[in-house]
Image 1 (cartoon, rainbow, N blue to C red):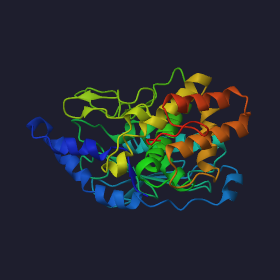
Image 2: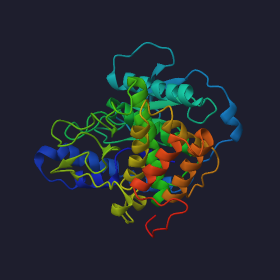
Image 3: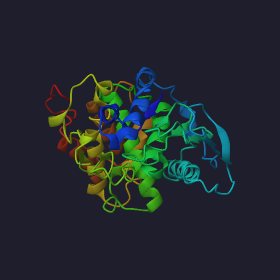
Image 4: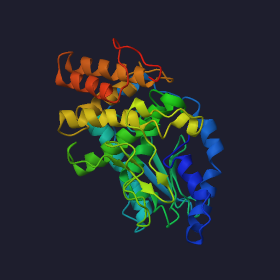
Length: 356
């Protein structure tokens, strides 16, 4: 499963630019778009899943290796830093190394997970991929980071939520294996935003109230009118820019986008479950990885979620997880139900909507 952080609709807007001052960005976007057909073909298939026994393994220390592609597109590249070695002085390599470690630590300490696959997977990352490459992606085996075009996007290792997001695609690949299309694909993207945000909050030791709930904060240059790629708290408000356009994410099923583009709108409609998680976290207070993170993690990895799950099926599964973990009369259970009702995803017992 090959998953990238920049939605294809943003790349297409950049690729269509004709202004001389955006020539590097347009060229970089065209280069990144070359990968889209192979990305879509591979993402449409479910991941391998993981053996239930892996949930019982105790977490081991991380094993990280960072490579340098030296602006080529050959993977993995030359080794520049292995586990336990000192910083290289290259910001991209060292940010990648640290980001892998922070992500490993969240899963180990908050959820008792033994690396991305639950079985101590060695974490690999390649930096300086391509020339002015406008993306970061998980290719099913490792992380890959471009340096950005310098006009619209900065280097992709700058954002810890991006690193956490992409590695979470690996967790989904090795657990529920949500197919990368339509609502299941939007859930796949949402899971990555959720755990990407949690990695950042975990490192900063932020409460749900203190967190920005932004994905990709710091990626844009000063030339862009926007704060991040997505806002989990207020989908549709992350950017509003003459070049990139306006953030298209809906914040409830009222704005659900039916489209054949972007594998059925996986980067657009993910705003709906993203907001549901944020609503649960802010309603319960405290640190989001403690309770809502645990509910979402158990739902993703518990073995009951179908690879083709819809928003309604996932909502039902999170309500069941909250009930199992905290009880049917708990504040946690009520918060989860209320969040899905707020974003207008129908729950069992409610009249079904054609959109949910």
